[in-house]
Image (cartoon, rainbow over all chains, first blue to last red; front, side, top):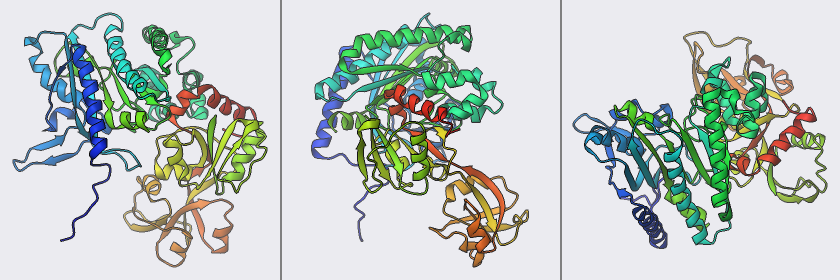
Length: 327
Length: 206
């Protein structure tokens, strides 16, 4: 019998020096997280599909690898550790002492369109912070998470001596929902914003044009007073972060268009998942196509699971980070 | 310096005309050199096959580029598509020997170079489309009875007239599009917005 040498699309074996470098990276990041008081959780690679049906959007659901096991149960491979962790913790939160600072590491498996370098199985390390609800005023939780995220990434960049620049994009989940809902064709307008299609956005709404060019309205109040004040805080946060990390080659952009939702194309352009409900962020190293990490606030996810807590987290793609700092 | 990808195919002249109209001198541009720096304009230019161009931009090897809607829709890249150039527009049409769409409830063979896009364009039809890919000369499909109809680009309609084929229905407009890499847009926001504004002010895009 002839044995095939290759692996399925989007899957690769990590061998020898690469394996060593990946383990070392994982160890460095994990040690750092432990030193910040985070506890590790080990998550299963297989779970029931049912719990994800209501918390993932269509893009998230369709990217899951699903199968029926011999008992007739519909199962899914781990495609997103955040909802998995949330669904496991939600029933236990009453008996746990909060806040929780947790981290996980391991592979996630998701269908992705075949492209060079796009992985269907990839190694991730993520952090989740969970505090007692109701939601505290101000973005303190997100700030803590963002600072942890940026500390990890910028220290890796500095350590490698790479001249590459970290571009961090901040947004607000749902900030453009009302603007999109008011459009004559909401889905098409959301897609036009996501693609920064100047003509189509302008023909619908001049405010939209300002957002796709500038990232947010110069007068954020035009998005409504509640969203407007959140955008103003976000801009201040971006300034503070850039001041703090600017020396390490980091640029922070506020860009609501990057996170517009409702265009139905799933990941990439918009939010991967609909469970975020506050500050969201994504980081690129130089102009690499894949973000090296992302995260945000997701109280809504726990709320849907029946728990009132404040939660935020992030995930770092270890393969992409390694490639970026060593490439 | 921004890296701009230009298509080697039918959209090259439209792209060059638009850039010149927007005030880029393109001094020293050589259409036979695959990689060149245009110092006066402050850009590095890559000349790429149309079908490869979205991949180079998506992967950040080029920051922006120009490519037709036909290619973009077929490969479904995750790119920003801020502008469409006016010159060089054409249409994606359903063509056949007779000027009528397949009857409701029937199954028609559809020849095309663009099976993915065609599938979406014909998704809501009352007739079934059995779509298959041809590499070129798609109009031969209906002409030689390999298919009942074809979906292909129509520019002037001359090829159709030559072969006594009918343009049954225009399915979509095709335009050379300015595309940008998502991360590059964050990094070079001012420059890339300025590029868009210059093209708009020159009246060569919509």
